[in-house]
Image (tube, rainbow, N blue to C red):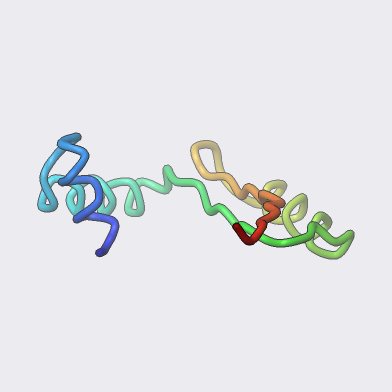
Amino acid sequence: MDLAGVAAEAEAFGPEEFRRNVARNLHDGTFRLVFAVDEITEDLKRAVEYLNAQTVDGTGVLVMELSYSKP
C-alpha cells in the first residue's frame, strides 16, 4: 500500500488531499527528508550536517539509526 493509502486508512484525510498537501509542501520547500539506516557513520553524519547547513527554513534532513531483531 502506498503512503496515501495508509493516510486514508488512518482517516486523517483522503488520498487526494494527501497528494495536494505533499505537492504544496514540496513547492513551498517545507518538508523533511528522513534517512533510516542500520548505522550512522561519520561520513553520513557529516553529509546530513552539510545538507542541513545548506537548506532553507522549513526544510530539514534527519537520520535515524534503527536496530531490528528477528522474533
